[in-house]
Length: 177
Image (cartoon, rainbow, N blue to C red):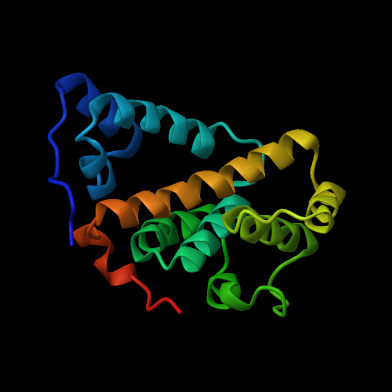
C-alpha cells in the first residue's frame, strides 16, 4: 500500500529527472514529497550509477542480490532490465540466489556478492574484506561498498514508503524467496 502520495515536480527538477532517467518512476514520485531531498538523491544515484569505475554488470548483479535479500520486487523489476542491458547473463540471474554454489560467477563476482551480503547485513568481516581486496583496489572497494549500501537504502525506502511497482515493470516482478 502506497504510504505517501505521488508528487508532482517543479519544472526544473522534472527536467533534470527526465534528462537523467526519462519519465520519473514511482520511487521518485514518492520521494518528490520532499523536493530538496529527491534532488540530492537524484544526483547521488546518478554518480553511483554513471561515474563508477567498476563494471556496470558487476554492480547490477550486486543490486539484484540486494533486491533478493530485501525481498524488494520493485528494486528487482527495475534493475533486471538494467542488468540485462549491462550484459548480465540469464544464467547468472537464474542462479543468483545460490551464487556460492553456482558455476556462473567468477572469483571477482563472488567477492563482490559476499561484500553485498555483508554490507546489507551490517556484518563486514575481515575475511570478506580480504577476499574483496584480492580483486579490487581501495577505491573500488569503497565504490562497491557504496553501491551495496546505497541500494540497501533504496529497498528500505521502497518498503517504508510502500512504493507500488510501475506498470511497465509489472511483468518483471519476481516471486522472491
